[in-house]
Length: 217
Image (cartoon, rainbow, N blue to C red; front, top):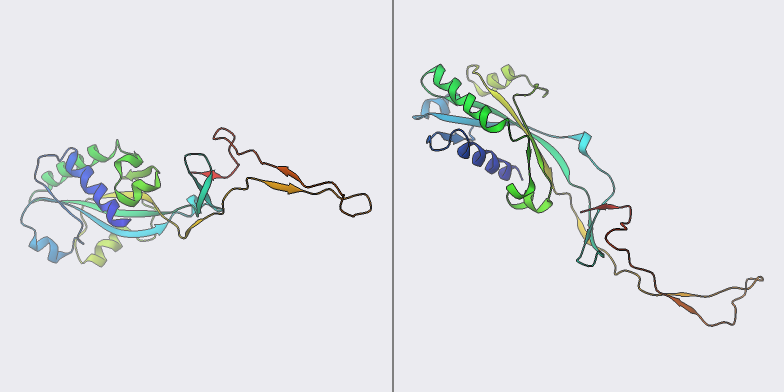
């Protein structure tokens, strides 16, 4: 899932305001060694924090239905994780770095919600939109100064990019076939079974418009 979020970010940046510029998009840690090896302008998107978004956690299960609206499988709701990226620009001149950061902002600010059909692989299969925030209030436990200190580099202007992505919860399991017929026997007032034959009853199958009160997907 994380590598698919990387793919989404790379595609957004390469196709936005930086399109055709030839600017390299890197996901390596922006250490001093990396900076020394860099020989061309680059935008670095370093994943520095991963943690669950507890406010989005759901209980129960999700029912998966076939074309006839019959429940065929169930699974737990996905767990949501906040992936925090440190976005920096690397050129020889500070003014050029600021221009690159402006281009990143211009590309990402309009994309606050990424629809499922624009996502790759497992993210697309979940059918859920993915929220994205850029340059918002920094809420992680580590300060940016601490992050730069851990990387061994000097503090640079940066954007905080947060993608909140769903991660499939396991297991997914089959359910039994729906009940299509039930037998009813009637007892007398004294508790003994009546002599009358069994009465058959065929439960009505719910339609798509009726629903069942469960989470549907």
